Length: 110
Image 1 (spheres, one colour):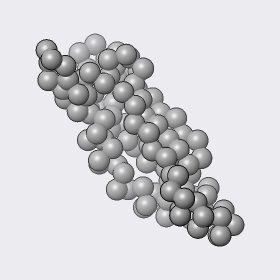
Image 2 (cartoon, rainbow, N blue to C red):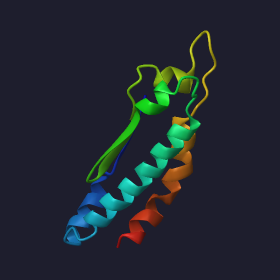
Image 3 (cartoon, helix red, strand yellow):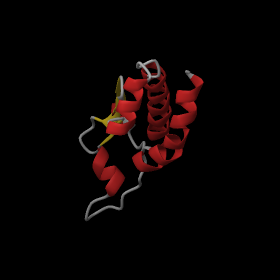
């Protein structure tokens, strides 16, 4: 299971270029803050029978892109379910909770 967030809107990037890129570090830092908070909520929301899936949750952040992911091999099944078990979403609720803070987090770094 993986969630990717990437700021690649052409208009946003053109406007950043017009501003001399001085906001790019603030955007990168705000995105990183948001993805760190999202990762913490993904870990909290993950089923934890053995804790293996929780330990496998990590994030990557690089300039204008970020990802939260599980390397357990079954994180997606836990999120969406299978024919034999119901899913208990933990990625989407974490993303829904934290993405509204992205603008505030960017602004804090300006």
